[in-house]
Length: 316
Ligand code: ASP
Image (cartoon, rainbow, N blue to C red; front, side, top):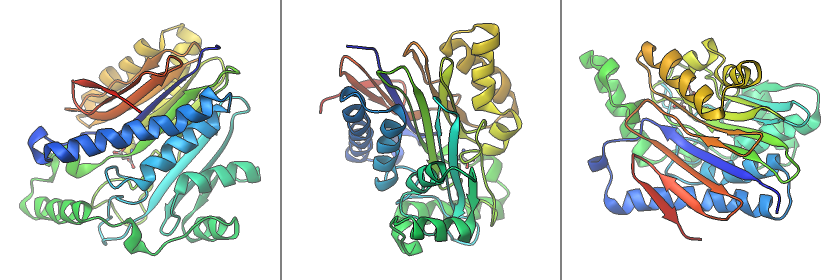
């Protein structure tokens, strides 16, 4: 069988071990495993990398455990504004939506933008309208809200009043979901979806829908999906930077990804992580926080999931 690979993340800056019950940690890891299964099913059947990353991200958008779709973060007005993008490394075609308030699965709208083939990025109400006329599910805001995100917003507002928001835990700050894949035809793809960060300014758009920053894929080089303080991913053009290091300096995926997260982003004192897959199927998942929800599966069909240092085998 030809080599293929899939890696996903469910956001960096995961909370302290004691913040969630053992059952909640297990449930989050189980959903990472199921997201991998959704993507693996596409790849093992000879399907396209872009369909695999889409399937994995849809699963995580639907899960309440991650900051995207159902369970997304709330902005300063208690509103969900969702960003997502997807990129096909074969053609460099890309699609994205940002500040959407109603699209149930923003990554599907990003894919529809890509398929439509004209614009790359649609914003706000126009993105919502585009999704609806494309036949995608739209929801009232309440669909996206979970109790955990409501509490996180209240906690972040309390930090702001107390002047301690800089020291707030990484988990209160952000999260995102993303996937990268190499398919049996040797094509690469990446997708990312997020609610941004808790208490973000009204109208703020992060890196996730910005091609080259939070998402990037180019055949023969790599596919990248990032998580962390998006402003810095945009400033460092992280996805493209990782690809450039591989293409121009001939670095390995691991070296390029680690260099960007640990040497370029860490000095800014912000949480950051990413998953990347190379043209040879090699996978990197560096992060500079206490943890990052992540997982990967190779053509051998072994699933691995983790939040902190310990890596668990997921059985389908
Ligand atoms: N990168 C996302 C954003 O800035 C948030 C995150 O990944 O934590 O919108």
